Image (cartoon, rainbow, N blue to C red; front, side, top):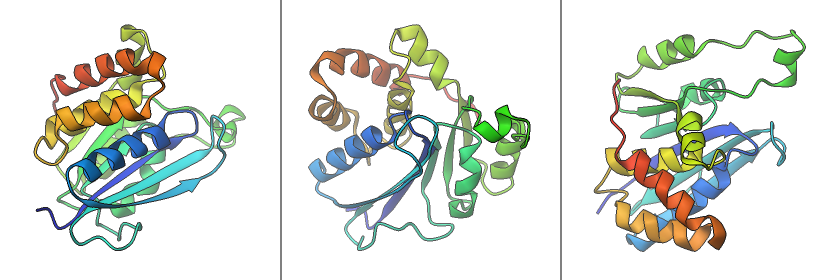
Length: 199
């Protein structure tokens, strides 16, 4: 059994981060692991900073991921990924969405947001396993624009099939998503599961 696995999900309100965390936590419990979840919330509405820490395994006692201790950093907003940089190590896998939601400081011109290439380079200086995915566009093409989180859930299963099996994640989606959205979410999840990745 796995001693410890740490996933940090970051982005802004409205991107389905808490739903994604709930699905992952539900799935790993089904796999027989203990799980601890911690959340940092800016504002619950769209635009507030959101971070979710998911720790699971046989030897997990705190919801807080130690510095340089994330196995996975998943950023639904690539600018927000920089807040998680301190949790990365040379063993981390980084998944970056290629889009971001400009905060009011950027809209007003008070702050210049870093480019995607700058964010990617920051992580590349720490780990080679950095992947960029246009998850928003994929979800939009499938017809469920708010389901970029499911693209990344599929990718997690693709990259870590023994830790996050696709069949268990599908069960967790069914249990944690409103019934009218289940089929669409499963479709987006399957797309992410079969997506070709390049670093």
